[in-house]
Length: 557
View 1 (cartoon, rainbow, N blue to C red):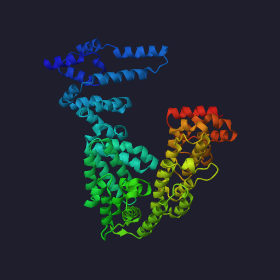
View 2: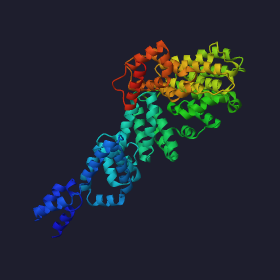
View 3: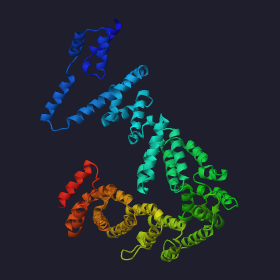
């Protein structure tokens, strides 16, 4: 009958004996009155031996070739699958018999090789129901880190939620350098769909309202800026910000406009100087604060045109944002507002003096050093010093190789008093270290770079480590000129000892590899390096790092 004939046709297919459901197929054939001897004939005649031939050819090839044939075959096979995959046909088969198709393919997700092919197909066919089911199954196995950027993850709310929770857990448990490294992943995930961004920001907003969660607002703003830059959803980003934060209309209008106008500042001042001032949280928008700071503390033509009473309004808003605390009952603690406002006015008056970037520089710095205990004032001085060091002729006219640099000493004192400003100081030092100034003599330029490296090393002593090591590793070739790199590595080796974190150790290995010739030439540096290489953490990861370690151990033995 037709059933027996259909089963016979299936058994006659090439290599049917190797198919996963052949046992059930053979049983069905016998149960429909099929002849057992016919079954044997069908299975034996249909066997082509192709798989054994391929295996034999691979073994034969391995005898005469040192190349990794398995990788070559896998690469060829993956290209064939990606090229021959018929999404329309697969979707039709899936709609007819999803159970059978999934039964034959779910086992593939156990293999990293096949998962990678599934991911590539998912990117190519993001609406495929079959592939989306496989992606969901991969998520249920806890492999969310592999699928976090696939469009398919936004198809299922629970999968999207798992991915975002996993990413946020990693970000919450890390430091500033980790946040900087992990945030782009979260941005990419949140950019997949509008609801992806909604889920991420809603979770961050909720967590930031918990006790100890205030620092997450920085991630909230970083995600907002990243998604706005990576997608065409600027209006949606602004709309969601207003819905989640619910700022007063005047405040919301100013924050949404970039940059604000002097009229906006007047409107904000009126709101925040009144008896029912809103939460200072709205003033702590990074873009708004950057505008207020640069307008007052970075010399420019616009600031010079502002009248004194308007400049005072800028300073008041900075002081309010920096010093006013919101209590749990939503009342405001303004006890430090007047002091902060007063110091900011004195600071602004000091740096606005004639000759503050020239003949009066030393006197100005001697005066403003008394104000740096106030965080808002120290932050303002970082803006001012950035302009002084990078935008004026300070190094050409006033820097002396054999005298201490007062601006750098001022920044060093800020680093000691304000750990939360280390990131801004590092950014300033990094820009100074990469400074290209052809009017300076080579000796002067080398001295400046050595002084900047010393400030970076001081930040390392204060606990700001990984971002600086990442920066030096990125520019290691450039810093190897003039022995700056070997100097930096030697100082790092002198100030630290094991046990070391894996990330720290692997970064320093890369620096030692570049500077090894200079390090080996000195008895002290050779001994320090040899000791460091002998204290490798057990968790050192990756064949490349292990290979680098063995090579250096042999070099310094």
